[in-house]
Length: 302
Image (cartoon, rainbow, N blue to C red; front, side, top):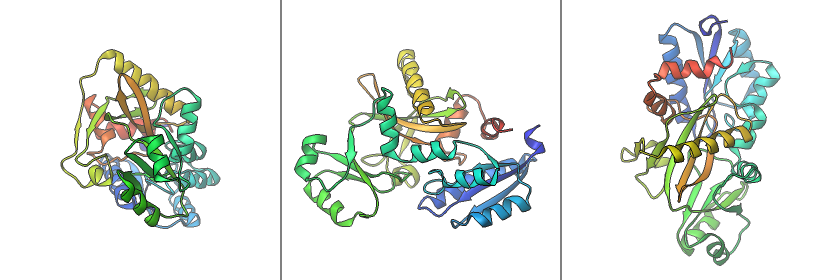
């Protein structure tokens, strides 16, 4: 069966704070496939209404779903579990892998158990500022355990920052305290069983936050000149991290390099797919066009 012979649905939007980015990714993929003669429809899932989704998929006789809903609902296993219950095939990681990968605490736990290195962390439980600085240093992060696109991340530099976080954060959500790594940040995309060219991130802000990712024109992305030895080490760690979480098809993992040590930060199982997002940039470095990249993701599921 060829890709052009099946009916595709591109899922986008969602109801999280990443909705705008998701719509852009999904629209770009949809338009590219449509322009190249594919039988494809677009569904903007604005609300968590699985019965409406099922109705649309059945009415359009969908064979394969390409889920590009970022953040809560799309990346945390919810959409995947709906599609499983509908018995409809989809690209990317399954519900269980998505749930684990979207949760920073569960991801770190699995990586550490399997010998991989990640920044030191613990669950936030109103610890004293003095305790935090003793355990994590003078600067540290507090991060929402389940949030993407660098949303709900707080850089704590002094007692005032910590006091403000204690007053303002949503107490209904779980947060982790995380060590601040003083090293260059990189990202690597995984496509099936291959690691695409590594990108070095030079953020315009103090760290690679939401504004640096999506709003600033000052953030720089370069393909660094790394030794073969360190590249091989990165690829080994990235693929191991991907496989430990039982991920499938594609993802992107952010990491640091410090004294030739690979420190894994987090995984993104539904990375941005606009024509200028990091995964397409990395693929393009190998001569893989945006359209070819989409086909490679889809091909694993036909």
